[in-house]
Amino acid sequence: MRAAVLYSAAGSLLLTTLAAAPADGAPGVPQAARLRGVEVAATRARASGIDFGTCPADQKAPDGLQCGTVTVPLDYAHPDGRQIRLTVSRVRATHKDPRNSKRKVPRQGALVFNPGGPGGSGMYFPLVGLLPEWKRIAAAYDLVGYAPRGVGRSAPLSCQDPKQFAGGPTQAPTHPSTAYKKKRIAQAKTYARGCAQRSGSALRYYNSLNNARDLDVLRAALGEDRLTFMGASYGTYFGAVYATLFPSHVRRMVLDSAVNPAPEQVWYRDNLDQSAAFEGRWADFRDWVARHDDVYGLGDTAEKVRRGYETARARLAARPAGGKVGPGQLQAAFLSAAYYDDYWPSRAEALSAYLKGDPGPLLRVAAPSPETAAEAENTSAVYTAVECNDAPWPTDWAVWDRDNTRLARRAPFETWENVWMNLPCAYWPAPRQRPVDVRTGPGELPPTLILAAERDAAAPYDGALEMHRRLADSVLVTERDAGTHGIAGGANPCVNAHLEAYLLQGRLPVRHASCAPHPEPRPGAPRKQALRDHLKGKADRT
Image (cartoon, rainbow, N blue to C red; front, side, top):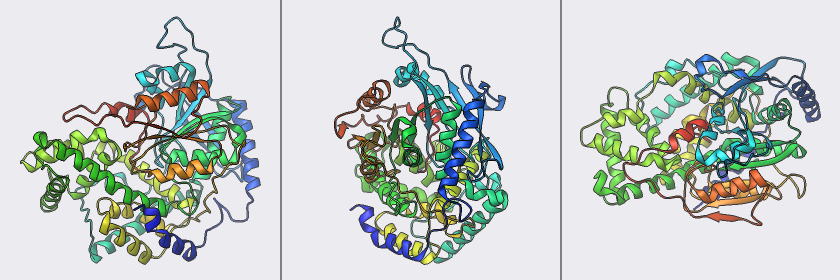
């Protein structure tokens, strides 16, 4: 049963118990003032452009990747007030047709990409042009990535000391006790206070509306009259917000793994739906492991595989592997397998080896990395700020407890960990805005391509259907019976053919289209998707 049906009552209660705060920033400021602020900032950005040059040394960028910055107002109601700089990266169009070396491909402009999160950085995205699946697109477009406000060097956000954020081992009970819940409530309150203390009054301006406005300033800075944009996951949401605010500024738009943009879904109910969907994807993984019992020895049924996982959880709770990996780290490692099925072999191998007495593979895939702690803390801070600022959230713990206790009975795998990730929003110190009513009428927006995998858990398929209904003249391409999160330029040639036809020729299917699923991973196969996901800045959240 779909979670949207299960939790309609909870959504209704939410809307009646928490009034929406004034939209994005100071109360009493009309949206027209912010639109004028965008016009002012965009005019300045077009005049100054982006001075692309060598990337900072600590980014370890390869030759060919150029970096620069674009300046945007912190608050678009005051375009002459405090300014922040967003980092931008680019690889110029190659003009080389990979299918015909004698043909010079004409440039079609810049293709701007956002990987989602919130909190993901697209700074390495332009390097996808080195991959075979992207070479035709890279021939025609300058590939442009950027770090949205708050991310990386772009006026970075932080809510706590990264050393505290990345600590382990941690617990992850699927049916937490009252005492454990009280502990996590206290942590959520502390985290929310930390966000406010470290950012002050600026915190309220990190939201999806400003991400969409920043995108228009970036368009102007690139010298583009109309934007060609690809957003993945959360990037589909603020891409759709952009399309709602600036439909005439859109040239082409790809929304890959679309989230549900309905105002009543953003973001509390979207997270409930996500937790429910992860249970199905967790089952897909266990079914696959059971079919390869001859390789992993974890059992020939999904239930036997689950019992092996629970055995590992209990052992790690009593004695963390290497003093670093407890049940929390185990759950996080296996959650990534619910995002991307090419993680399946490494996770199955790690579980099998650990149960047989070898913790090495599990430590490799699950141990916290001090080297990436600062980046992970920054990603979490941006994720929290944007989601908390974007919409009303229930402020009564009893609502969270009731809804998620009920959900965890049928979907225990991710439910409570998702709660702890989002619970700071119950105690958020900044004003929450009313979610944008994402919507365009016939002829207002150029035809848009929406891509979705039918069993995607991070962005459940109902979200793509809702996005399709709200954006007139959009076309939905579905990868059937598959669940990888983010399918553009990936392992499915059928999906990639639709992507290329749209970006290179402006051609879309006449109506809803579908593709057969890409092949399942083979046991022991290396993770070929790893480079692609790194370049696209995949963030394992929304």
